[in-house]
Amino acid sequence: MKPVKNQQGVAILMVISTIAILSYLLADFTFETKLNKIKIYNFQEREQARLNAEAGITLALTKLRIYRQALNTLETNPSVKDIIKPSMLENVVTQPFIFPIPIPGNSSAIQKEALTKFVDDSLIQGQISLSIQAVSGFLNPNTLIQPTVDPDSQSGQSAQQPDPEKAPHNIIEKKFTEMFEKELQDERETNENFDLIYGEADPELLVKELKYVVNPPDSIEDPLVGNIAALYSDKNVTPRHAPFTSIDELYTLQGWNDAIVDLVKDRLTVHEVSVIPLNEMTKDQLQLLFPEITPEQAEEFFKWRDGNAELGDEPHPFKAVEEFKSLVTGRLAITSEADYETRIKEFADLGIKLGVAGKLFKVVSKGIYNRSEYEITAWIDLPTAPEPAKPKPTPTPDPDELQPPPQPTPTPTPAPTQLLEPRVIEIRPS
Image (tube, rainbow, N blue to C red; front, side):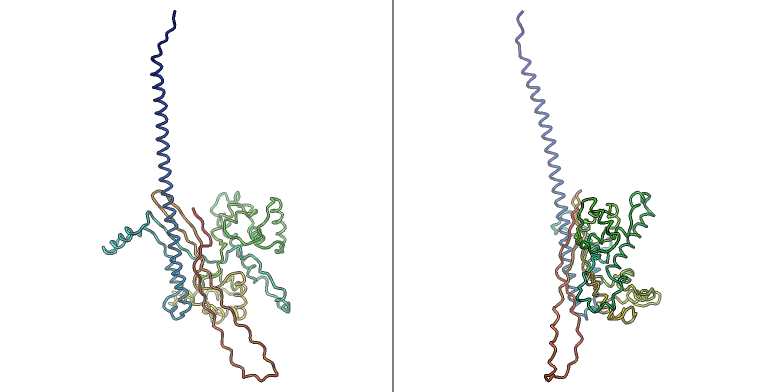
């Protein structure tokens, strides 16, 4: 019997198989094409959101440039301070900004038309949310760095050594410890898992480690330092022994877990807070400056500055640092002029000065486009211009030569504080 050699059905099977394979490839190609298209759209939306956030940072810099010019004008024209207060300028610059600008319900037709036209003419696509906040306070880990003492400057002063309890870096260390104790106590009252997360947290030891890390090696004389150094040695980690440049570097501390950093990092800043706004100074900050202040004197200070509604007393916001000095050395007699100057210089050596308005700002800019959001957090500083060089001392006259009668020495006028162009010193994208 001869085998059947009819192969007519094979061609049909090959065609069907080819169609099935092509259909699968077409479906897969169509899916990949749609997926890539979605990815491209998402990328475009995120990039537009990022551009909107960057536009917010640019707007903040523009506002701070105007703020800087206004403050410098007030410093060089004291008479203007009676009309415009520095705190008023700060309130204006820190007002939040939202785009598109919301139209109030009670706006007139002309106002609504103007706002609508402004939005239509703008090149911004999407939304912007911008907030500017003045940063002030003494809780900067870098202020725990102990100042170096010049041995030559200490000659002849052994009879009258300063009280170590009033040394600025020691007071700030105590303030850090108090802050930790308060934060841990507040967390204990609200967190059921407190003991599991923070049970081994010792506020004093945490601050000592912070102090150990920012100071040069072998510069801290404290019995706890040996335990901290052993901790780093056991983990084979070299301490930085240098100032922090970013708050995120706190996560490198070997004795701090991430939960500890998350608990307190919003209370800290590693940036130079060289100007403490006097009109925002708190009771704790006042006590840091003058530990000898009595509760009665502190109460009178704030009644004078902020006013007393019960007695109908008007507030007296400071227009210059000299007004603050006159209040604490004269009217309230908190300290003498000589002790005031010494105290202010001690804090100036740590990079902390007094002023009537803030110079470091935290800026949070959020850009939104469709479903994409992009947030940028930046710290913008207005550097203080260096003080003019002091005149050289007059040489001692020769006693054998005939000298003119002595002239009265004029009282030196403090140079006005001038701020430089704002600069971004740290930026964190989302």
